[in-house]
Image (cartoon, helix red, strand yellow):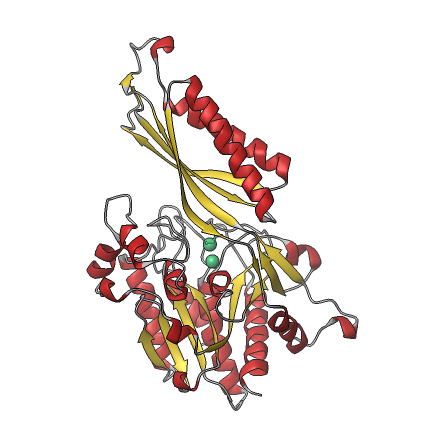
Amino acid sequence: MTFHSMWAELLPVGRSSASGGYRRFAWTGADADCRDWFRAQAEARGLTYEVDRNGNQWAWLGDPAEGDAVVTGSHLDSVPDGGAFDGPLGVVSSFAALDELRARHVKFTRPVAIVNFGDEEGARFGLACVGSRLAAGQLTVEQAHRLTDADGITLPQAMERAGYDPDTIGPDPERLSRIGAFVELHVEQGRALDLSGDRVGIASAIWPHGRWRFDFRGEANHAGTTRLVDRRDPMLSYAETVLAARREAQLAGAVATFGKISVEPNGVNAIPSLVRGWLDSRAADQATLDTVVTGVEKAAREYAEAHGVELDVVRESFTPVVEFEHALRDELARILGRDKHAGLTVPVLGTGAGHDAGILSGTVPTAMLFVRNPTGVSHSPAEYAAEDDCVAGVTALADVLEGLACR
Ligand code: HGY
Ligand code: MN
Ligand code: MN
């Protein structure tokens, strides 16, 4: 199996023929097909395959019980109509990098594993990085059991229907204690590498970011017969809040997006009773993020009051700032053969995108490699990375794994 052949095999899984985007949501059929693909890749290489208590998949080379393992991998699930690279590039590259190391006949001195973390995007249940948060104890079993999708199916029910035992979920400190370093390769979700002319870069940090649900409750009524003065229309408050989010983000040099909305009863000729909007906001530091979200909520409450609408705001997902461990980051720079002493700067870049590596960074030493994305577009069917850049990423990951696991 080459990178190209693995990529081609995975490409059609969970892809919408209508949009060309991916719908690989946690614990659905498409997710199961991705998981089958992962297991087949692991077993085809004679790796020890296992699924942990939280449904994350692992493929081991060597004995995990030895500890101090070097782990790589990423996720295979997607956002609605996401691209082909966000997540899968890291998993496919991990298998390809292992193949490259075997071709180099390296001698591993530490256990090595490839992981597929479940439900990284939170597309179905609204919380990002469920698999890695559960393992790291950043999501309690009670919180996980309360996660519910748009059809009212809870996470435990979805896991059970997918053939997994939801009663085992929970913190996995023993497993994480076996990891000496986790390195996640990911397509860049931005254009820094395209602008610098580099194929591969190293992550420095992840911006703090979160998701807040704004529930605007008004009064359902007839769209044709209700006078404007008599309306309590939540759609108006929502619309004004969307504009306020852009304004607050612009003022603060941050980002804020209302990308998801649900309307009840969602009829063309009915004034809504309820408009739910989800805010995603991110900033380079916590204080700025707090300023943006506070500003948006304050504006939303003023708009709601002006229209006789009630407002509830619920924080559904939050990830604090992540500063990747400097020693591991600098080790990657050294291994990649370019460091400041050689007069060459290693492209080290921050990101506003969340990752499992960010969740784990509080528990194990983690680092990230980025592969050039010429347009920077992500979370879209248009997401793209050139194959020669992807292959350069595989070589860089193989070099890093060799440098870390074959001392
Ligand atoms: O939303 C994110 O930043 C990531 O893709 N889960
Ligand atoms: Mn993503
Ligand atoms: Mn991702």
